[in-house]
Length: 320
Image (cartoon, rainbow, N blue to C red; front, side, top):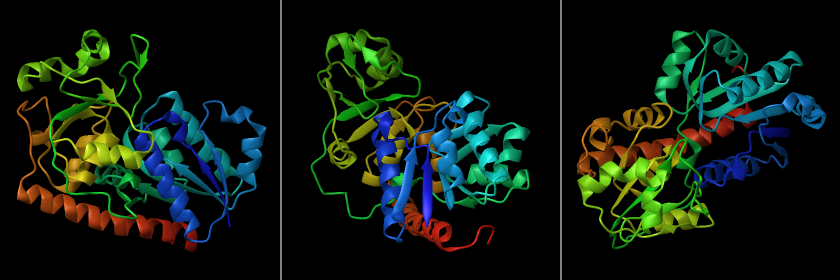
């Protein structure tokens, strides 16, 4: 079986993207799929004749929905137009790992043409049901855990990460999307910059963050998860940092991203969104025993659903 994976997000230098792509790689391989081709999603993919040829010569076009398909920005139009192109030639198309939000009718019509549509939250599934489009629920692929990651360690301190749309470069220092900034002795230049001011000003007042550390980065997402596990508390605007906090059971506060995808995730787990939302209540949040029961149940069931999704895509006939 030949599979073309579109929207390979590894180049975005974000551990969440790396974790999702690793889950795709391994789950296809252990199901016997070795003939796999990967492409990034380009806005002008229609000018890439090699990509179009590969799409037409594949058994399955597997689109990583990574992130949110919402509104009508150029990347959403580009992805949906790939679906239209592939289906016009009878290519089997699967779209996985996507949050769908605030889509135009035209976009929903294009989505309805895919053979497999797996959404990563129930809010997206309800949107599709409202528009009479069949979809299946499967949590974000970052929750796929082939081996135990969580270790018992003595946690201390807090950390922040950036949020959607934050500046990437601060005073000639590159802020990577996988960076954690430890709150103990942060360089004053960072605090004066927009990226930190935007995220931390309010928290500095509430959590008495008068001393902070410079940023800490890790090369692999496994190392990053181990780093995350050392903190007592994390502040973030990144969806996948929230996913990783849940994986490692590290308490967090989140601020809004470009869509309600973090809120959607917490609602699916069944924990109190307001409790972990910094705009509602700025006090530090901790998991209680009920939260941990729900989080562990979500992770266990998510592992099963992710495996079933890949079994379904690789083994069954479209539409069944």
